[in-house]
Length: 318
Image (cartoon, rainbow, N blue to C red; front, side):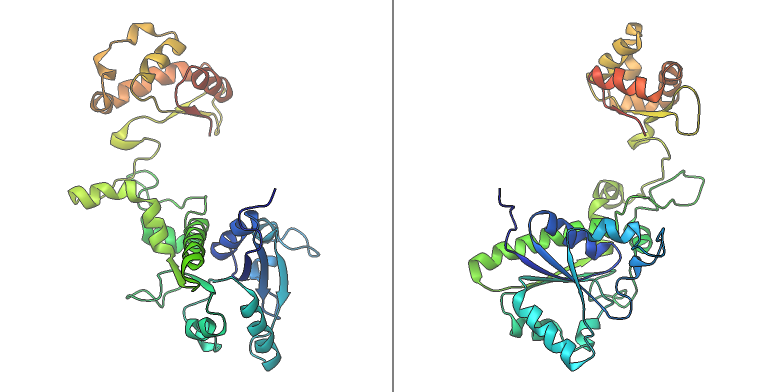
């Protein structure tokens, strides 16, 4: 069966993760992706973190599979000629160079649009192309820091924590892919390409919009809650045999409390006012954590998840 983006041609001028994750997703949907790299070693992640001297790194491979690749020196006349040909071929160009790099090479948006009026040009930058931070470099860690992800992760009495998932890089790539799909749809109507821009900071803020509600609505900072959910409700519980990774996540909602009590063999708690609603649970968080922990410590995390999820309770093993 044909894929949704069969026949769409992507020129990939990206590196590391934010850009490559975007073009990779488009490739998974059927697009023909050509990754263009410089002639001085290509994407730096080919060598960074590699496990063997005669192989590209796993990091590079995991974000650049399903693509073709070519090296061109854009500083030479021949290279510029080849690049112009690729611009005419492409439906989409994606880049996450530092701000102004393509302009300095003589291939700004106006030039590319003149060469190929139907081209969709997507740029991923740390802070976008305007504003007081526009010239600053962007990276996963930077995006997490300025987007609010670190400030709301960890424990209140400890420093902010870096998230292992790539919410800054791959999160920006996902936003860019959505923008590209919208631009391609618009081109179907107008015949004209357009410029799509994603600021990594903005992408993280968008993913953080739930955590932003206290700030926007109440002018209060969102506190770090450690292993607890909103309003300090317990979320992570210890399991047998008590190792560093022996925990289960449990997050009952509404009628799930009754299902939880039945699964735990604690029918005596059904109707207990401490579990009547969200506010009551928040007010008795420590007591509730103690009650549930007494049960989870008797089970491995795999057993606890199977029992609770099977009973209809939100549960998962970290």
